[in-house]
Length: 396
Image (cartoon, rainbow, N blue to C red; front, side, top):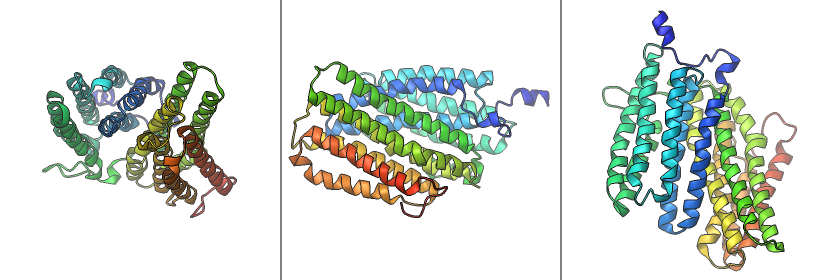
């Protein structure tokens, strides 16, 4: 029995500290500040249809590494020394992963793939071992997860060994396998599949972890605005662009945190099957939120560098895409955690679509102002509808 206790590296979810985010988890997230910065710079530097596809794939890969780690630390206690060691190793591998992002489709493809596979498979093997003799149901779950990640890993490594379109195709297959895993219950012949009741997560911990990641992404958007503004001569136009980028980021923060995050944390903590809700609202639902913030940061760079450009579909897509993707993500997230589609967000998406028709006739900085205004309108609408209420109406 003493030996089993020494091997119990799981959180004590019966205590208040059991769902608390630890300082080591915050330290681990610092690596992903670098990742988000690398992703936004890579997209801005290679802003073509192919470059956008590559940046999207890398964004999905980075998010999947992070969210899988968040799930694992929902069960494992970072205060236990072996778990700390695992997280530190993942940090080092994450730094390698982040550093290789700009050349992931060039000379550092195998380095990116190797770091990704080592993080995914290594973490899952560690968790499988940690669950042994402590939580047999989750031990079997992580055996299944490891199997799926190992199959995907073969395509990641294979892609790193080839070049150009072949690498993109191989990595798309790898990513499709990884993303299909949770939805398929990580079904493995002979081992069955996981069911939502297996995933007994701490909703408060999951909500806080994802909120902190959103803060990281918003912080990168702020840094882009500040860094670019500091490198440019002061003028009325650059000041307008700077304020527009800042206000847009603040509006995103408000939309996510004023009502969405708090209600989601309460709902998932009292959900009978929190694992199913966490998978829907956090694992998948946060992807467009992350993408929207990254695209918004790129759009701010374009607003500084091409303020008077008109008729450029690519730049207009970035300016409107940041707001649009963020609203889609919040619509998904809030709909999943409240059971109600916010009318304010649907109206905001409609306004973004209407702006797309006007985009060829508007200068980039004016389009940026209007895209930010859409976020402000949605935030004001939601605040007016929900302020002072304990539950959201069916449409707001």
